[in-house]
Length: 430
Image 1 (cartoon, one colour):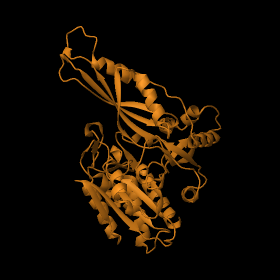
Image 2 (image 1 turned 180 degrees about the horizontal axis):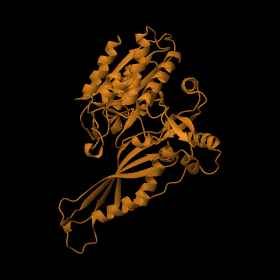
Image 3 (image 1 turned 60 degrees about the horizontal axis):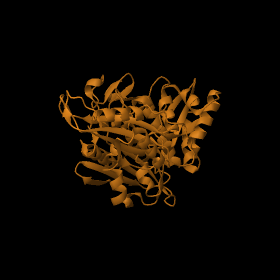
Image 4 (image 1 turned 90 degrees about the horizontal axis):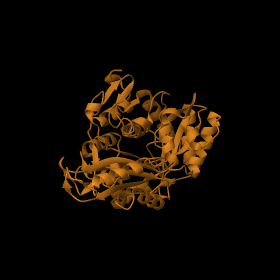
């Protein structure tokens, strides 16, 4: 496919990928300003009046409100984030920020997380407004900075300092839901109605500095290594919530399989790792820091652990973690947020399920609780119930969930077109 032949939704996603909005976390980021200005210009071209909020230089957020036909109904928030996680170019088969079109797919950092959905939001609203129509209700379109760092310099500041942006809104739609998975030889869609809580911790081990050649029993690196191995190898038990229990029941009905939820989730093939993570606490080591010279034993060693826990189990998980790593290692909480879970029912859920059914008839929609997190958590502080609904009909062999923060991130162009149509249909009718 030539770039000149790209559908608008793919062209907008490509343009957004070409803005390097890399977020390393901890305030180290390229910044979202240019991408936010692009979004603002697109919104202006639709006759909207975007507002920008940049509380920290280059960490830019942008919002616009779209008047609906029935303004007595609560407003609906559609939101995305403009930042992306880092990409090591040498590991990719394409330039991660070139927005390459190849093999019917759009490649690049953000193609899956989540410049694809940003593009679907923009072009769906564009289709409605350019046709002279209005959405059914007011829409609040928000594009945040810093989501990949927990929203500390993005959505958290927006909801605190610009809460009026969301006046009248009760529900929100964002990423990581609405996409299809393969269940045996059948297709199903996952609708995200919950998110695990995030607890980023740092393990700190202390010892005595010494020469690297010494006989030494107080080595901080050794203490840390033992703690990291113990925590990383812990097999956390399955604990079901309302959402994961219903997910397992519906998946089991599709496969005809019986047994524990782990076994049932394993039947989803490429998506199984994603779904199995939603059934339990996960504690994954993600960084190590120690030492400064080969022949010096350091007196301090640190490790970063990404902890995700089921809603309401944060304190119990931290207690277990401290027990596992032992008394020689200190556990410091670097960042913590909340878990979310909302019912798989109600008018918005019915509308999302119906919209998918009109465009892919007869395919079941299954609720799930996401292992990661989104900016829905910040909006929850305003009483806004958040869902994940970025609809994509995907080929069975594509490991879509494995490309979140992965190498050679890519999304099928026909899936983007499908998603835009479904989202446009939803906004016209709900």
